[in-house]
Amino acid sequence: MSDPYEHILQSLQFYQTSEYPCSYLPDEQARSLVAAPAHLIDNNVYSNLVAQGFRRSGLFTYRPDCRKCQACMPIRIDVSAFNVRRSHKRVIKKNSNLISRSLPLQWNDEHYELYVEYQRVRHPGAGMDTDTEKQYKQFLLSSAVDSRLIEFRDQAGKVQIIALTDILDNSLSAVYTFYNPLSDRSLGTYSILWQIMQCKSLDMPWLYLGYWIQNSRKMAYKSQFKPYQLLVNGQWSYVD
Image (tube, rainbow, N blue to C red; front, top):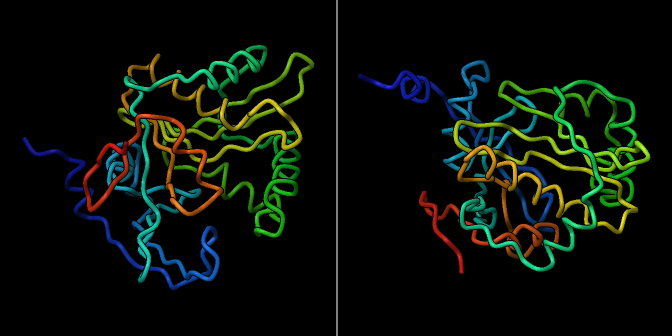
């Protein structure tokens, strides 16, 4: 019996965008391969596409397809073999009093204020520090798949982390995380550790972290979660 989702995958069309300035490597031009039409990309189809190196931004499903550069490497963490380091244990202990809850994709004034502050402090001049409410909604609150906002609050009730996570067929995909940029609690690291623990509890083998670029300081944190695999020439391979 044929797989109905295989038929949908074969019905998708892929087109290249025009070149645009790379967000991660200065002086480089980026280009994306976009999957369309968007209405065919449900949870099952998207799960398959993620395993092929695609990601999403709102309703936009893409993967890098640059002319002269292959630096963006899809990365996923092997959850069952994940090695909890001593530094990870310290981060977990430091944030053990945070209270998490899973929320649907809905507007929240406090979330947006944290997002604006995070972009202003951590990524000034990168473009997203001027995102309007409409742009925020398109980026974080628009999804055709099973997505959640994981909210973390401290004991005083103040939101510290928001992690947008997709729940796929056999994995979780960390779409985007923002947090209190003035905190010294390693909140970004904690959000990934929390999602790894969620994968374990759901018996999911992979946590997808998007793309890793060896020469990008912004991406360096992703390689601390070992073991991990990179998608190279269409094959997922472990990296020492």
